[in-house]
Length: 126
Image (cartoon, rainbow, N blue to C red; front, side, top):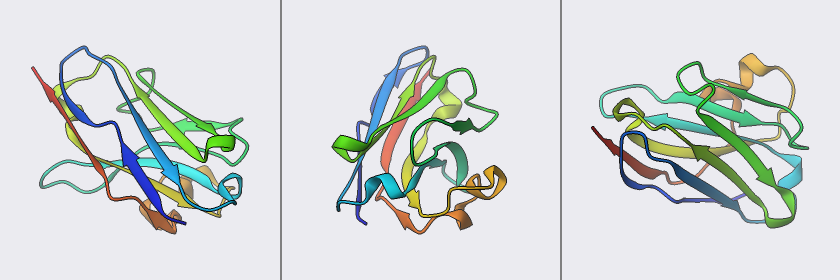
């Protein structure tokens, strides 16, 4: 599957931004979808994951309560709604797909994903 992320940009602290990630192929509903981010000089960090049917989600501690992940299987698209953005949210955001759909701790790691998009830059100014 090929993933194309979009929606990044430059915003001010407190603003909102919505990222999208569209997948190619006809089996989008077979994949759990995740969002990760990577700031300069830092490791890639788990942001959020949504399981295949979209009924269950999990978030990284730093974004819990501010970010919401959702998916539209009919449009082969996963979204990340980001509210109350902070300068520390500045990073390249990557979407990822995996056929694994079970243990949350594994879905919270980069090793849990088979496919990655190219990333979209989010910059939050103070």
